[in-house]
Length: 65
Image 1 (cartoon, rainbow, N blue to C red):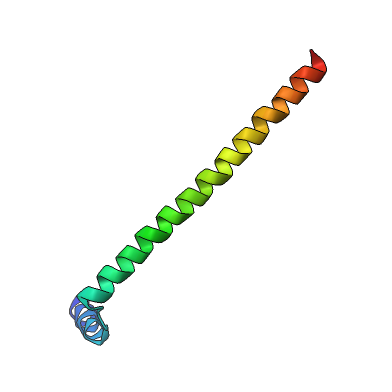
Image 2: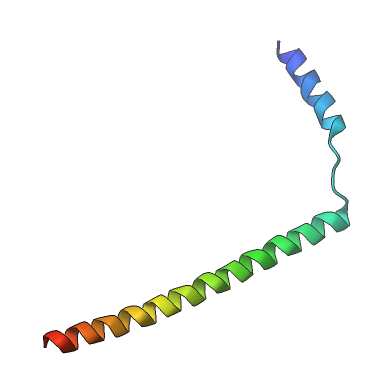
């Protein structure tokens, strides 16, 4: 049973089209850039929401006290 499984795995791996080194580097760079871009976007939203939260608490505390 295990022999047949590994033969099947080997046969399937022969069908795989592996990326070239250039494609791999380009895709890796793209992924890293997208992660950085999304991190900056999330940071921006976080800063905006933190600012809004502090202003809201200032208004609330000024109304109460």
